[in-house]
Image (tube, rainbow, N blue to C red; front, side):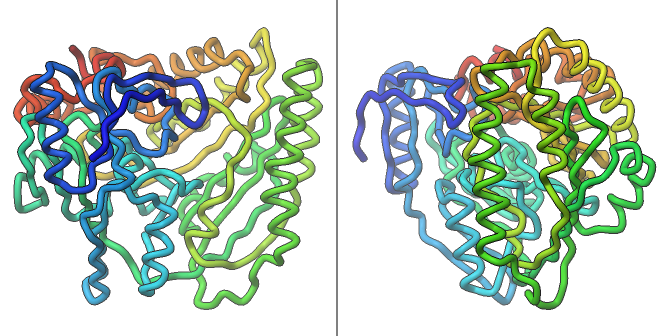
Length: 435
C-alpha cells in the first residue's frame, strides 16, 4: 500500500484538491489500516472513484483512498444471478464480466466510466418507469467504518447501515465490496426519433409506460426534442452498422458537437442557430444491441451539469419554467436538456425515495457561464419538491434537504453511529449533511 501526496481533479475539471496523503490499498485490511492511520493523525479520509461527479463529493483535503488496486475477488453466481465485485471496479469492466457469464444489470445510466461504488454512492440512475436507481440492485455490501471496523451489511444484517450505505455519499463508510442482483443477458431495440416537445408532453404517460426505457432531449431555443426508447427484444437482428455508429456517436455527437460548442462559446449569438441545427441533424434510427452497449455512449465533450429528480407530475411545469429561464439568461446555453424517468424506491437518500420521478438534467459547456442558469432552475425545482442529484452541481444545504428526504434524520443517526468523529467528512458533506 503506497502513500504519496498528489493533486486530483474530476472529469469536468471543476473540482480539484491536493491530499496530504494518497493511498492505494490492495486488501480490505489495508483500507481499515488507512482509516485508522487517518484517525491517528487527526485527518479526514475520502475514497475517490473515477471523478465523474460534478460536486465536491470526492474532494479530499486530508487523506485520499484510491481503490483502483483493491482486490477482494470476484464471485459470479449464475444460478442466483448475483455478482460480488470490488468497489473500485468500473461499470465498464463489470458489464463485460457479466456478459461473459450470460448476465447483465437490469438498467444503466448513459456512461460506464464510473466505479461501482462511486455510481451507487451518489444515486446514479438510468431511465425506466419500473426501475429505480442502480442502488436498488444491491443485495449486500461490505464497508469499513470511521473507526476501522469491517461491516458486512444486507437486509438481514446491520439493516440500518445497509439502508443508509446503498446511497451513502461515502459518509457512512468506505465501500469495499458489493453484491448486485443481475438478470439474464438481454438485447435492446433502440428507437431514436425527432419530435415536437408539445407532442411528447401531451403523450407523456404513453411514452413512459409503454416502453421499458424512455428519455428525451430538449434543444434550447427550439420546440424540438430527440426521443429515445429502449425495449427488450429476443434477438440482436438489427445491429447498428459500424460506420453509422461512428458517424452518429463519435463524429456527430462528439467531434462535430465539440466544434459547435467551441464556436458557440466564441460567438454566443450563434447558439440558438447551433441548437436548431443540432435538433435537425439527429435523424431517426432503429437498431439492436447488447444492453449495456445500447445504454452507454461515449461522452468526450466536457461540460458541467445539474440534475433534479422531480415528482413525475411536475415535469411539464418544470420544463415550461426552464424555457422561460433559458430565454431570459444574459448568456447562451449550448447543451440540450436531458429528461429521464425512474420508479419509486425505499433507499433513504435515493432521489426516488417513495415516489415515481422525472429527472431533468441541465448542462453547460466548459468555460461558459452556468451558475445563474443552474441557480434559477434550482429555485424552480426546489419549489416543485425536487431533490438534487448528489453527484451533480447544486447549492442545497442540510437544512433544506432534511425536509426533502423523510429518512434524512435516520441517515444522520446511522452516520453518527458508524463514523462518530466524522472521519469521512469534507466541505461538500458539511454542506449537505451538516457539520
